[in-house]
Amino acid sequence: MKRLVITLALAVVLLVAPTAPAGASTAVWQPSTLAAFAAGDYGAFLEGLAADSHGNLFATLTTWGYYDENVDPSLWGSNIGEVWRVARNGHIALVATMDLSPNGMLMGVAVDSRDRVYVATYDFGDPQTVGCGVYRVDPSGSMVKVIAIPAGSMPNGLAFHDGRAYITDSALGAVWRARIGGGVASPAAPWFQDALLAPGDPATDPTKAGIGANGIAFRGDRAYVSVSDYGRIVRIAVSADGSPGAPKIFCEQPELVTADGVAFDARSRLWITTNAGTTGGSPSGALYRLSSSGALSQIVDDPGWLDYPVMPVFGTTARTSHTLFIANGAYFDYEDGAVPDIQALPVTVPGLPLK
Image (tube, rainbow, N blue to C red; front, side, top):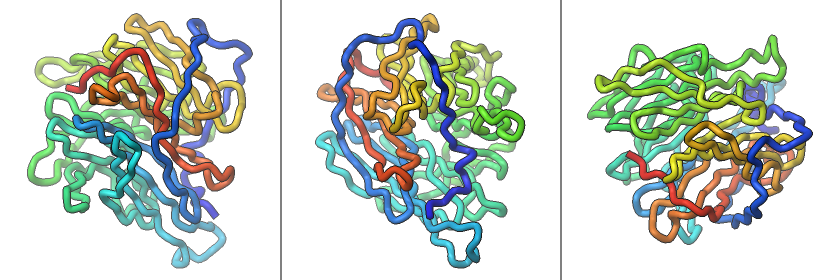
């Protein structure tokens, strides 16, 4: 059976909305499937997606191992983490693997200014064996730990800004920051932590999944963080000395509940994927666009080609700059037979160059 330990932590919250939000798009959005991944024997989850300067995409996949709470744990299989490189023509190549036994998973992925690839890890075991933090993918295929984050956190989104890595924490409602050097950076406390980024409590509110700060993207010296449980986008300024400014709710709408990855286009509009749409359709998921003034537009809502979408990424080459790549996590693939994939959606504007 599929590993179900984190079902509550990553559960889809389905909202039924009788009408589309203000600014809903009437355009016909026609994507194509760029790449698809095998689900393995017990399902797989595609969580992170990033692009390098050459137009290659990097995707993080966790292939679930066998899990049954009624069976001796010594008989469980292990989770395996995989980092895949996806070329512009859709050719996929496995560039790194990681043993996540028994309770780890790969989270967000980001590429720095030198095109080096970094991956966040989350360990939901007690005690932890993999640990929470960030690993660099070396050309040899090895995974080298560069940032350690204390147990009890849930590293999720990952982005670089001015030479530092920023990691959202979905459990603590925080953002960690570290400069990557020759050893393992171990920040003692989050760079920023606030109730606006905190998760809800599924034990007291069944509409919450226990996921707070999730996706992160920068526009200038401001970080924009999605907060899944509350359908909220929070803006945090980065001061000249690197300290965080006061947070501000940039947008909060019920249809943005389960908001996950975020990406800016060249017109300073923020594209947002939500794991669930509002119609109750299956497969489920939606894509929204937020203007620089905070006005929300619906691009697509449960269109049939979104299946637990987790991350939007703009192409980085002349040929792909007007393409938005969307990672479908396919979290429920073990039940519905779907597989994680990457959709290529033509759009009318390129992405904002990453700093």
